Length: 246
Ligand SMILES: O=C(O)[C@H](O)[C@@H](O)[C@H](O)[C@H](O)COP(=O)(O)O
Image (tube, rainbow, N blue to C red; front, side, top):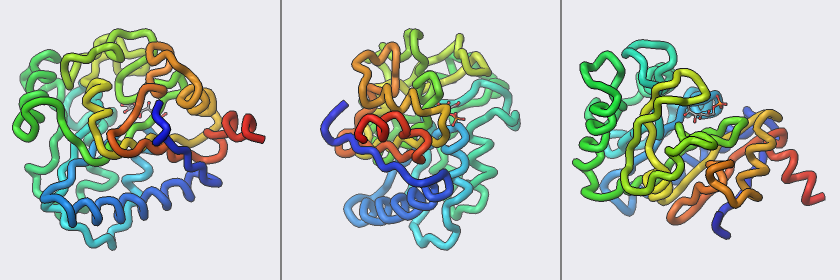
């Protein structure tokens, strides 16, 4: 973890997602002044979806220049309640004036592709924009109580992959078992990596993020954006770190 990694702990989950809303708007606005398009990676999970629901519809952002990607997806049929993209669509995307071609969903399991073919298809989609590693602007990541990020879980081989941007996951301990995930090098090749977590059940994971030196045990400890890495949490999730400082 780099020195550029910071922790912003808010009183509770609502304060956390309200602040992310403001920071997201101002960061995207600033980026749109400097560059033609802004690429944002979304995450599933409770806070990841709650923050999308909370995005103020009054924001004046040029959504035609904003692209949405996913850090991971559950490999289930389209329309299944587990789909991260479906939850994100219901929470935010359906109310955005965003062109359909800017929303880069990972394939569903009923799209006529095997899991490996679906992984290749997402790789091809990324390659339309970046020949090598994707260069995202903002990457949101939730974190599990076991310290996983995206679908990179402790003890599984996915966290070690460093030669491709997208992988198939077949043995996720968090159901469903089959998933598609970006790899650590792809997630970390983002200007801003923003980890979001709330609740006391995340306290061990957030503590590990700042103290572990073993990504295989605590994948979240390996996140690092190219410019900035911020952990946005509530006080409950940051409790062990806060206690240590006192
Ligand atoms: O598909 C998923 O499950 C996620 O993308 C996953 O990485 C999630 O962000 C964390 O598990 C946190 O989820 P919770 O906030 O629900 O604990």
